[in-house]
Image 1 (cartoon, rainbow over the protein chains, first blue to last red):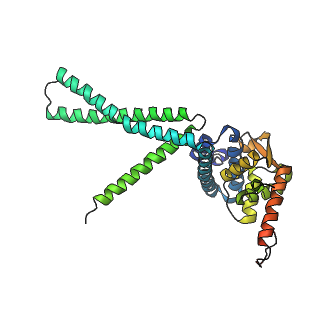
Image 2: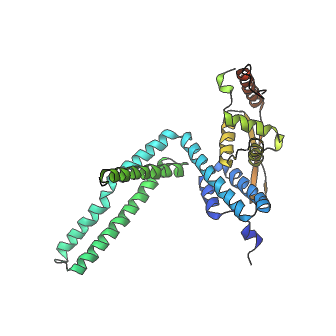
Image 3: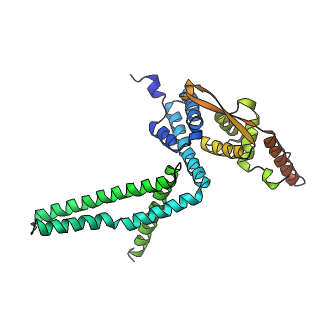
Amino acid sequence: MISHASVARPPRVAAWLVDLFVSDGQVESIPGDLLKEFSGLLSKSGVASARRWYWRQSVKTIAYLFATGFRAAPWSIVGAVIVGYLLLGFGLWIPEHGIVAVLHFSRHGVVPYYTWPQMQAHLLWLNSAIMIGQFIEALLVGCIVAMATRSRELVSTLALVLFRGSLGVVGCLMSLVRHWPE
Amino acid sequence: MSGRDYLGEFEHIVMLALLRPGDRAYGVTVRQEIEARTGREASIGAVYATLDRLENKGYVKSQLGEPTPERGGRSKRFFRITAKGTSAVNCTHRALRSLIQGLGLAGSRV
């Protein structure tokens, strides 16, 4: 049987996201107010409606907290995003070139000839290693951006993700338009 | 009076919603008051962003209450309007009244 306490809880992911974005001064007020209203709605409108309301409020609240955090220190966040973007752009080739160089060296030193299955395995490991290297590099850049904008880490890293993501979408659209069949 | 004493639209709404419950006003009462009187679903984030801005301008003051179990052990943050805030509300009303006067709009009393 599901206990009343477990039913009465607001959506965990939404609550966690709000907790991530609230500043030290709002850590009592915003999550507390959301929980208070959620409990009121739960008895009035039921679990589904209360949960929908909580999600809606959480998304809007996070958008406001993001905008407020950005407006509080716009230049430092813009600067950190540009530096992060350049680091990601310049640094992306490092894992690829590094791993290719190591494999090239080992090929000459240890494996003089590849059979077809060996080549397939080589390519698989090469791709995986490059992806892992790029992931680690993205984490490092994220850490640098977060440290550069102390106390607004989430706003700056999210701004970098949005900036890079939107450039990626624009690039995809432009490529689609260019290669669209006549 | 300087131009800075005027309130923005949402600031004005939040200040009026703060006036009703008196000293016991906090985020939930302000949000519910706005929703009940204007039919507009304000987010708690928007209400607090505005309240923080108003506090920075010296129009409201806040203080933390006691933690309560229905809030998951968190405290309420109570707000009250300062004399400077009351003066800003009055200035905004005077400006609106003077703008509306003579326009012949139905129900235009502010």
